[in-house]
Amino acid sequence: MKEIKRINHVGLRVKNLDVTRLFYEKLGFLFLVGPVGPEPVAIMEHPSGVNINFILNAEMSCTENILMDISKKHTGYTHIALEVTDAESASKKIEALGIEITEKVEYEGAQFFFIRDPDDNVIEFHQPASS
Image 1 (cartoon, rainbow, N blue to C red):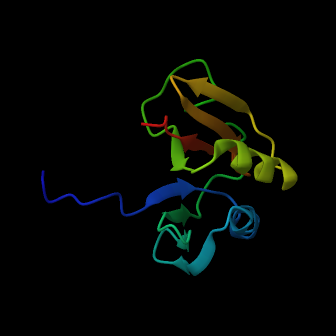
Image 2 (image 1 turned 180 degrees about the vertical axis):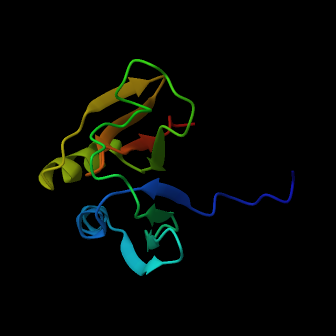
Image 3 (image 1 turned 90 degrees about the horizontal axis):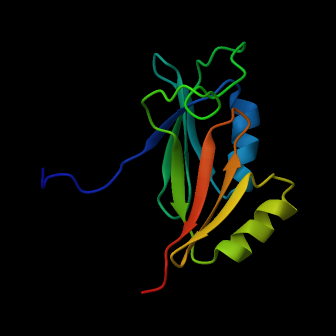
């Protein structure tokens, strides 16, 4: 469909808005609104235009990410990838914030690393290979 322009937002189910908000603010996201709507949802946006809708109805008893942390491979979205201009600089800033980097990879000139948010949602920071 040529009418599609871009991804409008990503939806992540989380347990606690206050904890989630503090974490994503460390990454530079700004709180816009919430909770609103029947789910309910809170919305944060990065100055780059990346918009995340946090769905605030996760079961408090859930302790694992079933898409990433169990051997059975369920269908579904496994992570969000945020493109960065400098993966090395970004990883140093993430570590300075006290956030654990769970994996670093370099593949065919691209560099990327992964972190987890407080609900174990996976976030990739991706620097494409130079052209």
